Image 1 (cartoon, rainbow, N blue to C red):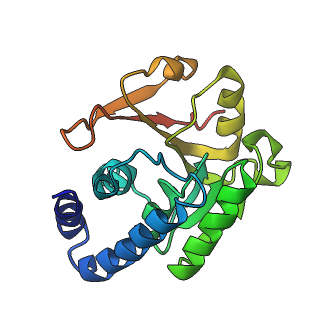
Image 2: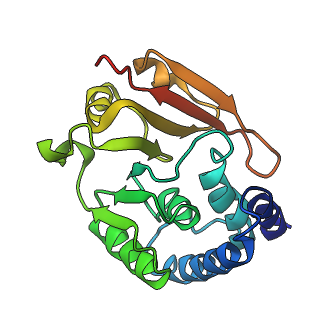
Length: 208
């Protein structure tokens, strides 16, 4: 059921390439299930069948209202490559950078990207505050699915975004940490399969 729900979403939004995309996601699924036995990329308590909705579909739920194509994107706190790799699969013309402070996880998802032939991916094994000045105003979009926003991150992420760029936060019930941003737009995408899910869209003021 979970795979079918995901596949229906792909067919709806990417009808021309749906077969090829599903083949790539099947490879990613197989890799993730196997690699998760070695490195804790997602919770080991997860029912593997629910990866299709809880992780893959959840990663791409902003697709209907956020334009990722041809954008330079940073996945802040990517963990097991989520949401970065699913977005990179769907948008091969996007430039996807995946950042995580845990070197083992970055090393693992580099292998996954190579196996999937996602040549649009690059990788940062560091903390976001360690990114150099050369990345100031470099990204059109920053996605963040698993990191709590703390006050020090506000200036850092806004500095990395281009004027008019977007910060996309994946939140569940607790959204208190978005209060550090002034102009948050909340998209409620909760479903039975995803649970309570809110996508928070924050646009960088072009005057900043």
